[in-house]
View (spheres, helix red, strand yellow):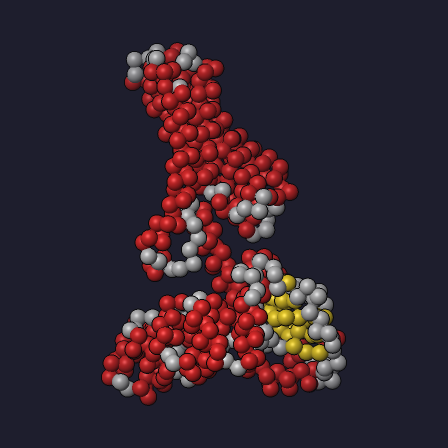
Length: 459
């Protein structure tokens, strides 16, 4: 599908005011594409196009709009239109939408909703942010013990259109406790007089309303689910979380981790729609912290300044500092990245810290050996152009090579353990990523270099 041609055709229909043809053309597009098309329209045209959409499509299109688009649509609507729109949305989409609006607009919209809808939305808004309860929906297919397959299929035909998904059905007892799940495929293949409880899977996976959304996403990924039931602390069925919401959670959490790994405070807004002051504010705290931390590097060099100036050895040691710090920082970043990824995927746990440390130390021994040998050869060759004898060149090359070897091992150890220690004290492991690891390893690499030089060289 050539979307640019479709966009040009829609633009022409909008410009010429041919609303009947425009309505027909829009109804043939996917809701996501309609939302994308409307993003480029000004307020007047966007509202005109939105009002042309059939009622059932409009709510879906609205759920795919970004926060800025939604705000523009709501501000252009009167109260009755806004209320009808919220009424047509699934409860989880309505809650997500209302969470992004100013409190005054939320009150205005909720005031016009019917009492039952308003009570449900208020209940969802009270759940902790980023919890399972805040992203679940109550539009799911429930069955009760004693229901036959024929009765279940009749219920699906009667109410299925208003449910967010019908691929998995949930069997409840009289107290609304979840007993098991039934796949729609099993119902389709079973005889009408069979009881649904004989078909249900009793080894189901569920989450609680207060569970963190990242934990929910991990469970859905681990068990390959398209929806997951949400229960309260008395194991009563409350709602479900569907795969489309889980994908949003994964995108949100990954974005947050990337920002933390780059030493920035997380932002919920799109990059191009975030103002410059907000971007600067998000980056400044960590930049200040890292800059102040780097002062320790200068203090170490200053401490050994007199020794570095005494002879040619000191000049060479000063020249190798950037190489040594770069090699150590890169090794530490590699180890921390793999550890953070392992924690995110559930492949690594805090109890594995010694296994991980032993593995990275062995990797460091191999990598360090290769890098130190190359360093020894290079520095021996590079020093050949200087007025130093071979007997003088070998000790300095050996010193630098030994410092590289030890630094690589130390960097690998630091890189793999810090994220696990952060997790152990309930901090986000993503904080222990490249910038912070590099700063710590820089300090360690200098201490290693001068310690080795003090033993092997007359400085």
